[in-house]
Length: 485
Ligand code: AMP
Image (tube, rainbow, N blue to C red; front, side, top):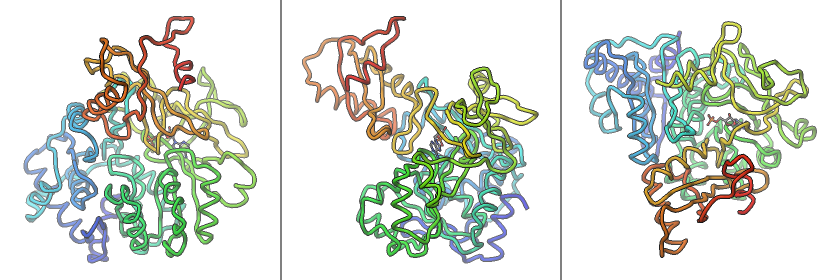
């Protein structure tokens, strides 16, 4: 059985089992199968042999799951888009991905209610399954193409390692479907006949409602960035009493601080804590390690673990030679989980993807080393950042600032606290003199930028300068600017 057949078989085995809960809405496995089949039939009927992607814009509605499966059942990849993205960003992504159709929950509801007309032509192993867009350093988002084969390799490993109980799990979904972390909870849940319990934006913004929802969720598997768990740990009632059935915390996407893991183990003594590592380009995660008391005693900076079976991870020097253990270099991932590349960007693809012994390989831009057979992540080689788990290229924000007529020059740097990027600061040289106060200018630039970029990419602080300091070789001195914060 391939991944789609495995998901569909729950509709026969347990048709009334709940596949998805979002607010007061529920979707059964039977509905998911029938409606995604109907949508696939419609797409095949309407678009025939055209395999252009299907864009899906929404925010955790059950229709998003129907749309994802409907698209791939008709042999088309889907491009998940969350409504947190501003229109201009969505337009850019649509211009790059050129979808056959942009579906909204309302559209899906309509198109999936009739009986399947024409059977779909399901995706094959090397066919694109989804395309996820991440921040690109030039201001253009990059579309990472993930095939059915990539996803199957990832999910098979997760199911093998975590031993989820078929029809017995409730997975928390904290990341929007436009981020690859959500792929972990979505497909681990659907493949095991589990229930995906979505935590929507409204809950994240309202702690009281969030804890009430968590308490009601009966979740057994927690999937989030460490930042999300840190936020929850602020509440003293965030303990086993709130989540009595929780069996594992699965983290990925940014550094898991030893202190966060230790506090979780204290509050949830019966629960496993896992640290996983990987980029969107290698399908969510490629390494894992269970963080128990012995690991916490041994390492102050936690490891990210061992490579998934069937995938090689190595650390290379500047000329691409594989380094021995304990030496720091760039982390490279090679295996069937590695993406074939960026959509429509052979130039970008060629800079970071390559063949290694007949397998697709990806240079992550992450620094790290192996120690005691465990991989340790030690920061980036470029300026890419993680702020609250979001992947951000400062160059993306700078390019969008420079596109504003009032901005002549811009540099974006992280504001570092306790060794981690807490927020962003933008240094700006304006195109012309103005009477406006710094406060007014900040408001205005933030507002204009918010039309182009998602909220999590907006600098919190703006600093206005007449000119930027330069390094000896004539480049903007970013280090000096950052130090001046
Ligand atoms: P994304 O494509 O959004 O998943 O971001 C991938 C990047 O997040 C990686 O290249 C790393 O820089 C960072 N990352 C992912 N997982 C971890 C982890 N467990 N610890 C530290 N950094 C991580």
